[in-house]
Length: 239
Image (cartoon, rainbow, N blue to C red; front, side, top):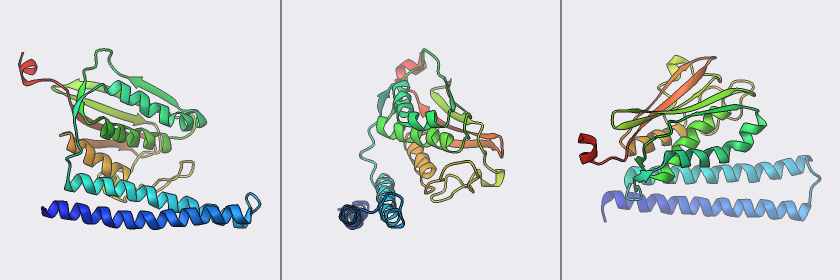
């Protein structure tokens, strides 16, 4: 067994133990709530729900960390193939639709009709887009504007997610891709999360052979861009 595989199995074992304990905490808290049946929004109800909510949050973060660690040590699950990115975008938008509607945000999709397929792992590509679009929704105020555009550049596609939200200070723009880094929350935006989304998105983009970057003006909005290889053969690209 290689050192990488040993590390991967050790990580899986640790994650399994932690998630097992969290499951026990969640189940116990839910049983406690059912047994005590506290009045809704009472102090006891709020405390129990806080335990459940935070335990589930930690469980979710462990899953993300486990997946990222696995990719770093063993990317054998990475299976790129020709993918219609338009279909992935529709799936992402359907997941974000409730929050977009709640915030009355304007979503603009600027994609050419003859957009070629990209060579990507559909699951990982969905995660990248969900992170970038989700952040745009999260950090853009009510009735804000979010635009997703795609254009060709050589044998690659450039995907851009722009918003007119809070923006990122210039000195922080290169830090947002670091694990656990969070831009300071601004009044009127939702919870900033755990600071893992962009770090994992960067990892997944680079796994595809692409790059990711951000341009932003604080107080005016941000544009996150990344590249993806088109699903073309060497023969077709040379003609």
